[in-house]
Amino acid sequence: MGIPAMYKCPFCGRASKSLGFLKQHIRREHRTNIKCPACRFTAKTLTGLLFHCLAHAEDEKHKALYYLLHRNSRTTKVKVEYHIEKMKKYKELFRA
Image (cartoon, rainbow, N blue to C red; front, side):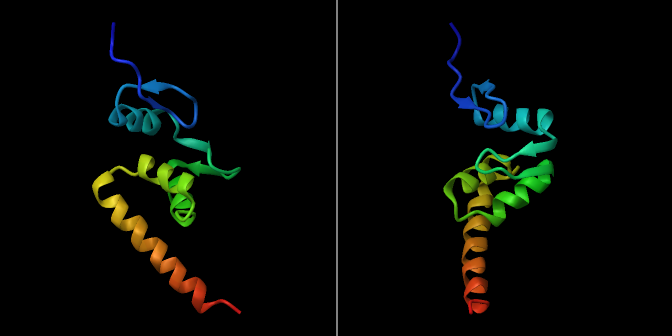
């Protein structure tokens, strides 16, 4: 028997044996008109969905999806944490 699939595509449910294969599947198969599995937003491109997830990175589902979609997982955590802190700062500046 083979190794059981451990990762599931959030867009179509396809199972993958590794996170790398799952990322590769998403980049190949889900390029346009992608619905965010965390909310009702639809992006025209994968990059659009990536930016949408970054904008909503305070939400755990969006943050997890951003990690999954981003090509370089090593630097992603730092970028997301930096973005969250920056957005908190700017929200405070514009608060009435």
